[in-house]
Length: 119
Figure (cartoon, rainbow, N blue to C red):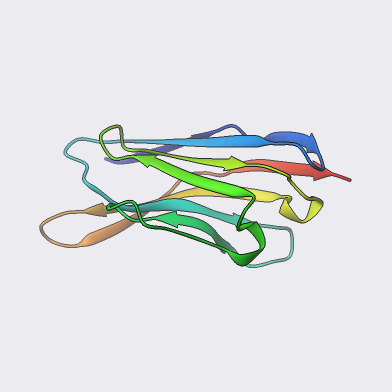
């Protein structure tokens, strides 16, 4: 059974920084792409940043240059360093991971962590 545990959300002022962390646990877990999505009130969930198993990262346009994603494949973890936060970044952030098996690739999600940025 795969568990996805996030931490690091909170309430900060615009211009501040936060770091989100996510650890995935489970027996014989092999991770594929890992990353972060977010969902603001009244909006659809959107990709924030994703990093492949080989370390190639991609970002949503509005966070480029402000957010940095990193992962440890050995530790099955992924982090998101968020700098120069803006009120528009306010959302619930969800950790996402692929699980690669011999049968198929599965998707797993965390329960979400709230990030609130005040102006």
